[in-house]
Image (cartoon, rainbow, N blue to C red; front, side, top):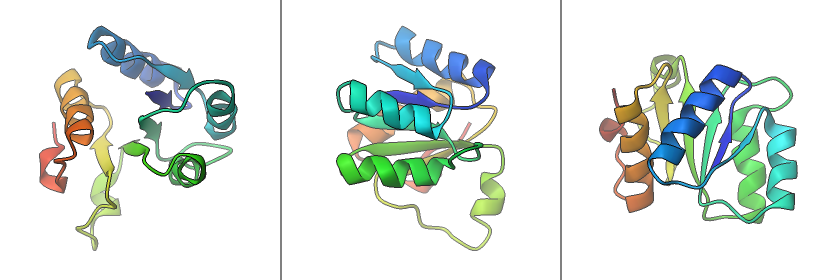
Length: 126
């Protein structure tokens, strides 16, 4: 699992929660670093990324990673998903949004649902 967030406290929290739950993780502080990490390491099943980051937005990072790994699933962390979905109710397949700040339970639930392939927009909430 690749965790990407420009805010170190958020990145550390997500990494710690996922590792304690038994997931293997790698981290990056921005999109370009994440792309370098994927070139140097194995492929990742899930990308957990901040949506709004300097240098490269999370959705652009996901698009580029999917060029190399089309099956990668994406969990976007954002502080404003309510504004994203004001006029949109559908998520892309294998993508989910989780509001920041998220709880341990919400994060683990979102990752589990992405892994199981049974994710619906209503399932991911804190």
